[in-house]
Image (cartoon, rainbow, N blue to C red; front, top):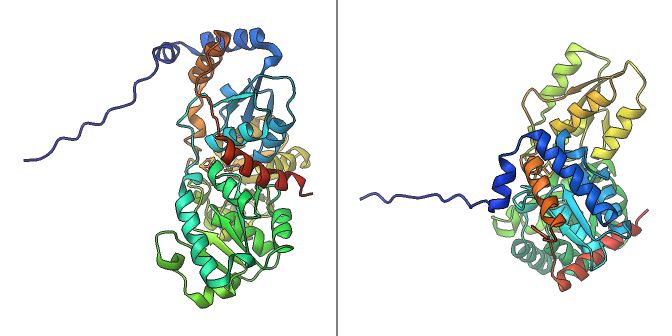
Length: 371
Ligand code: 13P
Ligand code: SF4
């Protein structure tokens, strides 16, 4: 007898279901009037990967670093509505005053890379490393794209957070204190940054949390300057070196601009590497008539192509590379969350418990102090 599996889709709250039935014009009107009513008590933060329809309502846009700074500096507001993903909203909650409530319009807007490292497997790796090289010799560094738990782990163990825009400065900070670094969850950002700083590849190891000693022997662990967690971004791993070759074969003058979450073989071939904010700055300041192929999320590249029409800006991959989770923050979710706020109800609040928030803040503040 075969068992029947019934997959139940979570029910939408009725008020959200009603917003899902509205057309774009009604949604836009609803968002505009809620924003006007809520005034300065509301701040909307938007990451560059958001779709055009949503990002146009953001009071501040930026990369993860800039948005963390905006959240830390924001004054006089009661609510932050974060049009980004879960780890960004957690960071905003950690960095804001306790009375500020942070809202993520769709709770399923996560980050697949952040999900690749969890507290228990990082703790197990740390214990293994401690038994071989001693925890006194190693410092944990987490990429911003990680849960608050892991940021707190770094805070408790003398470690620090980094983003794609300050990874080099943060690694300098870390190596000034300890001989080795455990870097999670993005192996590519860690490898690309360490390589650019002159660390040889044979002093980097990959730690696979599903393998004994991360898949390494003791000698390799003792030799390692940086232990790279086996995590990646499913969007950025779609860019391949052959995409760069194909662009250059068609146009030898084209400049290649990529995010450091791309694999090393892509970053090595690129002309410029930068965070999302960095990529936009390069494109903004590029001479008119210059031609670019850009390796990062599609919505942002398309928007840049429209914003800077005097340059030719193409998407690097022949495939569609979207951040599917960011994309979940759509007009109905934003309109719904704001309408609930207008009626005095906070939906989808992101709240980090006090102890975790304390230690995560320690690691984040170390990062914000690094120049
Ligand atoms: P940035 O900090 O460069 O915006 O990157 C965040 C991110 O998730 C890229 O995939
Ligand atoms: Fe996470 Fe990749 Fe999306 Fe960035 S693009 S939020 S790393 S899944």
